[in-house]
Image 1 (tube, helix red, strand yellow):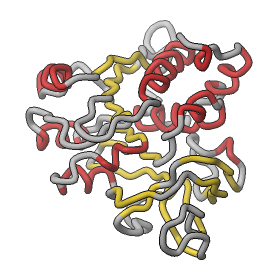
Image 2 (tube, one colour):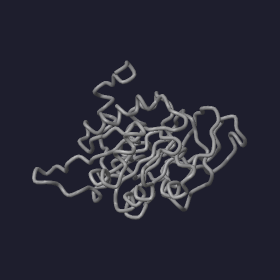
Image 3 (tube, helix red, strand yellow):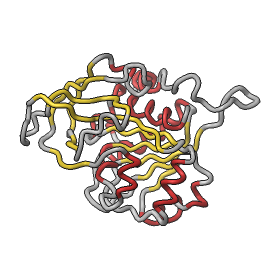
Image 4 (spheres, one colour):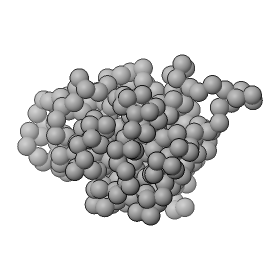
Length: 260
């Protein structure tokens, strides 16, 4: 690993401490009193823009799973991996899927079957450009809860923490100040999802209405059938994946989606 991944022990403790989901949402414990780690497929295949932060984020998620004992990760980084790991048969051996900075049409062999698998009670987490994925598949976008439209220059925003008791954001307080590439979406999805983070003004990103008051989604959860969906638009910059506060946001969101 490069220097950017040389985390200190204290940083990792801060990132994973208290990462559990709601107390009534976990799986039953086994004979040892500990639930077996969930099996999490981390999809980072892209057919559009490819983020450099993928190479940082993948190891961070794998390490967080090991440190917490909540999940183990299975890398799905190529078209061949997608064809092999995201079939109906292979998904029977998985508990959840993360779309980590995916873009474009990923070539999932049977996308309706994949969405049905989530609806049957499995976890899905989308990170950043998961909303810039499958623009040609309305059913996928409906599962996710929104669709990326555009972004401007990277900007610092002061996000409103709406669901202050949710494990993905409970550690952030009432506001979360963060510098990142801030997505604008095709619609305001308030009422269709449970907002976690929102913006009460447009980012100062050089686009229309920059700095004006508004109501913009940034992170949310929703139910897809019996499945749990977590999405955060944050995570473009490599530096965020070295920030324990952001990592805790993502890991707790994934664990919530997995019921862990």
